Length: 610
Image (cartoon, rainbow, N blue to C red):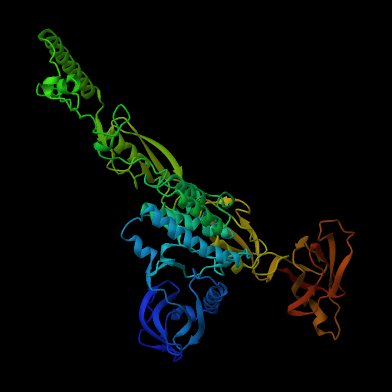
């Protein structure tokens, strides 16, 4: 992709100064600017020069500006003006001082309360767009702006759709960002308000977990994971009501999500009412534990059983020391008599021996441990060999992906984890790209058919064949035929009607009387090419009478027998390169040659035009 020139320092149409670049996408570049006429800071988005040469892309750029101007909400970046300068088409929008959510997330996940508050404001802003019939279609952290005053604003409606429209972008590409794309976008299906709900759910998940639920892989793999895989568990600190909001927003089917962003915002508000409750229990210090009577107090000492004699006094004191009555001096507690102390010492020693025996049994009976190796990118046989060396048992499943068929694309447990020898490792093998449905292109022009197949991810081969009843350049046959399924990238064989031309069917010759063998005509026209010369003294006469030819129809074009009527006759004239054309159409014919008064030699060929 070429580099667009930096326009900082220029003034568009003599009004909008461009001071510094704020951001850049594939479509345009955004500058911090100043409106000279009104004296206010603005953001100016200028279309890149190579897009400006494409009228369809310019129309899309203007559509983005019109969509932004249509939405009136403090949570949506406002559009002020649109224009066409020498530097290219541009629009002028509200300048939001602050940072994007993407920049904020570079420092790690947010506290659940902050994430919930930002997500609620985001959904309120999207709800305003939904009420006005606009679906954003590209909700992601880079498009969520966090103003210095704490407000959340949504920008960049560049791939937005009108909600009432079922069409996709003018191009054949799927619009959106793969990490935040809804399952219906990955399928190329129409988008609705539930599409933005899914993407908002991904953004909320990333704020809570520090990364999107599906972050690794090619765009095709990410799309498949959005379609097929459940998101990983959120951190334990996330409260149950907030987990439920995320789970519903990330439902695979649009009908199972919140119907629009307003419903999701209301659910987030309710989740905030109980903020801090229902969180998963967190590990804390032993001093926070409760004693056996339910009262808060110091936890019992932890005893390490290493099996040595040094542990005996500690075990004896922990298990056998009599409770001390608070407030009394030590001598208030009467020591046990010598006989009892002797029995207690024997009991303590026995307990120590039992504890040591149990510890040794646990250690000796525990299985050997091993480290899970990296299995991804290996073929099935390689996975089995590597796993066998480490005494692991691979369990295979498969799913479609852009990776080569039979190659491992995922595993669980992850590489580096310590597990028991003999454990199972779940390995996902690629079954190759998902099959695509072969579109029907028979009857279309060859160029249009090739475009349709390319859009479906298929290749094609073309063979030009004679097709008397078809227009030249039209596909007369395809293999495989629709609606079959075929691997992505496979080839569809196309038969295309070639331009008509004269084709010789049969040739014959004779002297005086004679007739030809039957021949079948396929085109609408056919002709007889011949040459004839007289024999003997006829050449010295003023007038000579030579043979004549009569075409007889043996079978009509539909295959029905004919009564053998004449399709037309003509007299053979002397000379070379003579022709006689018939417009009878398809059928089975024969030529019968009758001699005249004067003897003559003749040669004929029948040619069909298709």
